[in-house]
Image 1 (cartoon, rainbow, N blue to C red):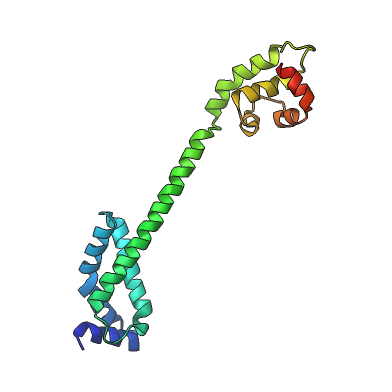
Image 2: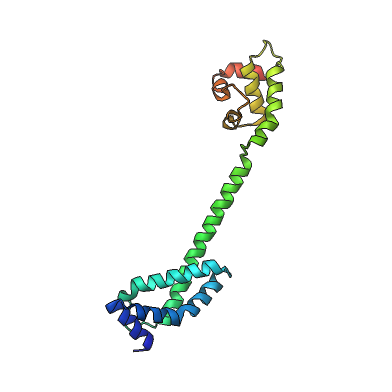
Length: 181
């Protein structure tokens, strides 16, 4: 039985903090350097991986065989934990990238709403020429269809006092088609 195996057995039997501290002291550099290499040089992530490896060792100490080569187990487990953490980081980065792209497409900021306010004012004031004089809510819905603006973003603009979503959904299809002609 090696010294590391004896320390692990002592920790597993009596939960000796001194034995576990000695194991951590012996294998900390190996674990950290392995983790640092596997997480592409991210020191903070390597520290997290190292901590997770030793937490798992403490949790699994009782179930490990007395013949286990502790250095090999720690190295192998470090590789497993680092890969798992990197998969999670890649997934998180992909979700953040996707959310950023979605937010870039849908910009409901006050600045963009104030930029289109003059266009909306013009659409309300300028009549659409059809067989009949179109109602203001039809002109506004035509403008929305042309510019493909979301109603929620328009409603957020405090300078507009009309509920455009309700007005646009209240337009019968035949009136809408006539107004577009």
